[in-house]
Image (cartoon, rainbow, N blue to C red; front, side, top):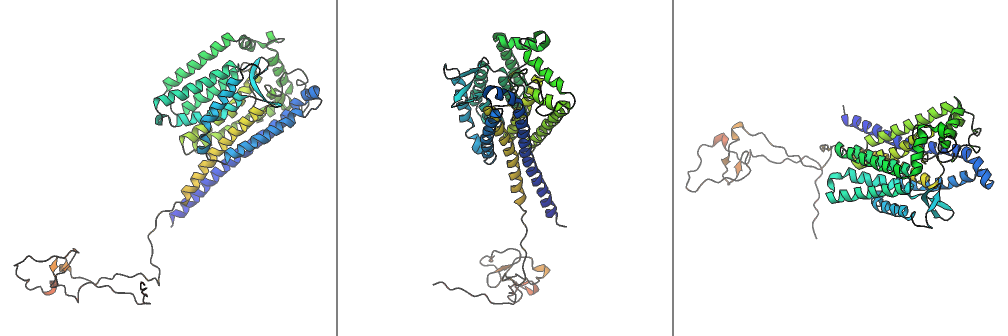
Length: 468
């Protein structure tokens, strides 16, 4: 029984598993996009119709951003991660420079009291959202090769990460800062860093959040209203109260697609920060549970990709991608349901916004690329075959060395009259000068007639090629 065939079959099925995971991630991402477009069309139609007279305006713009993001995601999924990671450091510094550029008077755009956007023609980009893919790549590179870097290099990149978080926090953007900091911390945990250092880092992040809340009055008011939103239903708790009204109005099965009432001028920012409230009102409790199950399936596939990754860097990239996509979605749902303080955090692949959409699609492309690289590694392993001894084919011209039987007592080295030696040794042994000649060799003497000789197998004679 040839066991190599069974090993090849096992490798074949493992390759199919990897191909299935990559395809499954791709289809889950496309399904997520489709759900997001449906909900966005319903949530943004009343606002767009009242503002510009075209209810599908935000939907059309979102299609453009999705097309750009899909092209970027396709490029990422089809190129090696080593090539992409060569530009991660440069991209991180470029995005950091764009975040700092939002502080320049006349250049940064302020919306709802926060200066987070830069104008590019008729559109606005949010550099803190574009920073996320580069933050994943560079942090995975640092913590994945932590022991290969010098101490000075480690502290330099940690200082750069801290500078990015501080720059986002000053905008102010506490929610994005918390998500980026949590992702960096979880990547460090997955890389096996000492728990003492991790606890110190978590304490420093918590202290920074407390300082930010104590300085920014609106953040402090949001936390107070989060504790008791009904006592502040007309001012700071208005958003959360209207969100709870929308979720409660959905009931078990929902009001139906496009039939929600809270989006008609009651729920503010319903197509970005509170898009889940519109979804829960129109699709009900059952639809909300189905969305949570979908996120559970996506996170499970992402964890499988991370566990089966061939290198520690790829594993950390997959973990970072899962945290940004699934973790940010759960935080958005927690804000909409009143489980977390009210923050301006979009739902990935669902909320309106070009920067968030492009960043989320690039992160999904990185996750697909990790699965593909593991699949390619399995293909290379399957092609390796063990070395087999060469077999003689009938009719070949290879000579056969046939040795005639030698007497048992001929194993000793006996000098030959012509100066040759027979026996196990191949070197010629000559008797010393002046020694008497051997006597009575008899049967022990190997003569040319009994010496081993080469016997050629009968067949065609080999032609000799004479050199010119």
